[in-house]
Amino acid sequence: MDLKKAVLECVDRGLSSLGENAKYVIYWHMRSSYKMTREEIFNKPEKFIEVLGKMFGVAGASLLERAIMREIKRTFDDVTADSFPEAVNELKAKYKS
Image 1 (cartoon, one colour):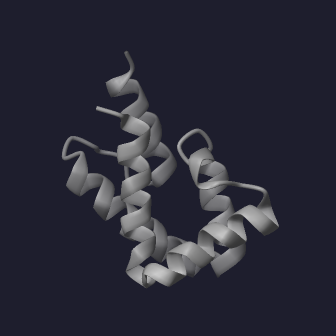
Image 2 (cartoon, rainbow, N blue to C red):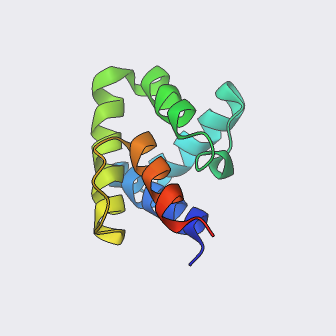
């Protein structure tokens, strides 16, 4: 299993809760304003959540993080973490080669 790809697909589905076009706008804004690409999310999950907070405020970022975590837990049913950064770190520890 390609863990990074699976996690990024969960992020895509979570962000798509705002609509497909909104997902692309979020990625574009992340790249242009915060110098963070989609591919960096897996290795910098804390920064990703921080960037969402700057873009949407605490409440908006929290809603998006919950949507992403729903997808993470749907895909990886053994995840116990409640936050996205904790979930990514948990998955890295469980699936490291």
